[in-house]
Image (cartoon, rainbow, N blue to C red; front, top):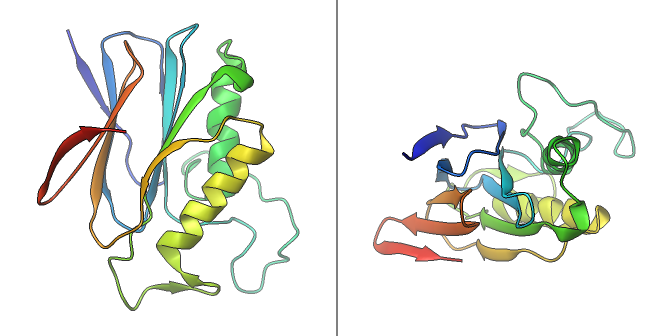
Amino acid sequence: MQTVIVVSLSEVKVSGSEGDVLVAYSLGSCVGVALWDPGTRLGGMAHVVLPSGSARPGDDPGAETEVDPAMPGKFGDTGVRYLASRLRDMGCDLRGLRAWVAGGAHVLKGLMWPAGDIGAANVKAVLEALKALSIPAPLTDVGGDCGRTMRLYTASGRVTVSSVGRSERDI
């Protein structure tokens, strides 16, 4: 029996049950990050809203930001680290993880991060965080101007993306 686990804005969720499907809806400028370990069949997903917890106006850009337990996936830099640490604590080897990234669209023309397009900044932060953890390069479906829904099927590691006007497809 399949159980759908919704990963809402700023959340990180993990699962080790083979029938689970982790899903992030409405990935506009937000970015979904899915990690899955083929050896343990454990997987997780983060729903990233902003690029960096340390890049808010007035903050020291080099400062480490603690993860807010109520919103562990809010920022690309801290959310990816938190997701990876949860999977590592469950027995995953980070070097063996498979990764997928979806979203990062430019859907709200007036919404800009201090460095420019918020969607592109989210994608960049997530990719840099994955690289810093030595997680192999992800498969991606990013950019453009439409929102997406991302699903991770924990039994197989299959990841799909769908959006308005485009049918669901594997990435």
